[in-house]
Image (cartoon, rainbow, N blue to C red; front, side, top):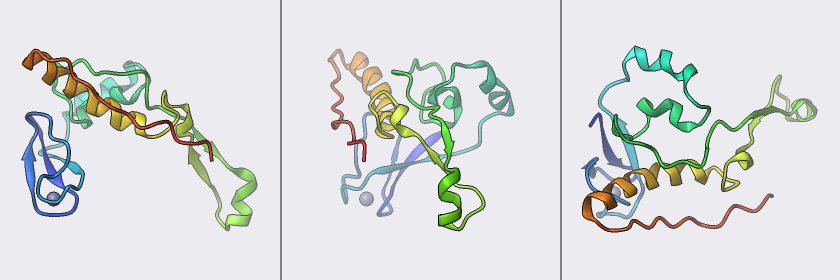
Length: 140
Ligand SMILES: [Zn+2]
């Protein structure tokens, strides 16, 4: 494994094994810390992969041979907001349209990243994994 988990609030760390959810010391979410950057070949392979968050798999907490759980999340469009650039006082203003994700929110990426090891962990333990998502975000 090329990554470990570091607590976003305290000094706790955890290896990538099992199904870590939140820091047992303080309850804060884990952040992924990579031991090294992916091989340059991975960067060249991106263009040949399907357009989803998993095309960047070497930069995500995913085992090299793991098959990701996906509904096609990620790869949401960047939209330029021409009419708001002047009022905002900026030369260019762009937003990422996360409403194009399967859940209608940015949470789809984290959900897919959590569901993938959950499925793998469940298969090893002989149990059926359950991943619960919150309801889609409201449109405004
Ligand atoms: Zn902590």
